[in-house]
Amino acid sequence: MVKGERWHQIKHMDPAAIAPPAGLIIRDLVSHEDRQQCVALQEATWGKGFSERVPSAILQVGPKVGGITAGAFDTSGRLVAFVFGLTGIRHGVLAHWSDMLAVVPERRGTGLGARLKAWQRARCEEMGVRVIYWTWDPLVSRNSHLNLNKLGARVDEFVENMYGVTDSTQMGALPTDRFVAAWELDHVVIARRLAARAADAPRLAALPVVAGGPDTSPPITWPDAPAVTVRIPRDFPALLGSDPAAAAAYRHHSHAAFRHYFALGYQISSFHPAPDGDGVYVLTGPLP
Image: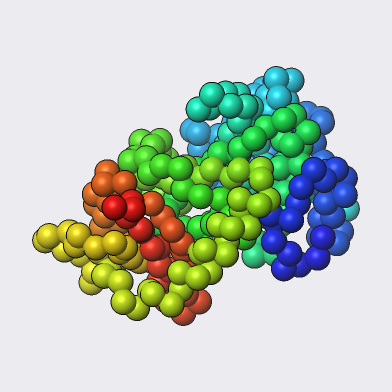
């Protein structure tokens, strides 16, 4: 595949045919050393001694029952990215839950995360999986852009403080609110979804902003509008380190908005990253 292609074009593709960036190979984690590197990358990403890390034993056992434990390796054998997930039944159909994905800092923004998801998807198709699920922090703009605009996933649900307050260096003491992504393995569905999201952009300026940072508190009375917007920071992890109070404001304000509107049946219809400012979610209400 070449840079810029939509991931919904990947259908029934052999994992070996999904070419990683030059100088890298994507493969299963097959040795104790591979799995030890994976644990080390988790700690480098989420903090030394991160209590939610997946240990080597589970990385080894998971694939024996349909799970996927794979990584991208450079020519020296160094693990520079990995993906881990388990397979089971959700909503009555065979599904895969992608639990973790991480990329070393110097490889972020290169499309490697999306390549790993594509490789994972091809493996799931081989098993007859119909949908892949995973979670992400609604405030991390780069993940929202990848999941919604590149992969064509949808938000299945909003979960308040899903993992409790963790010891992750990326979260501090803030609640771990999460979106659950659902990625159907149907390229037609995804193509239609991406087209609808692209058509959402012209109405952004006319929609009420119901949550944002320190200067955009939730309204006293929530607008009863067909669609509303929630703003998130361009780089939430960096903001958490430089201005914890502002990061906390984004968390608490978005939490209130998502909790209110999801309870009313609103859904995330699109996400619009802004290179020089906040990213914007559009939440659209149910049809009358």
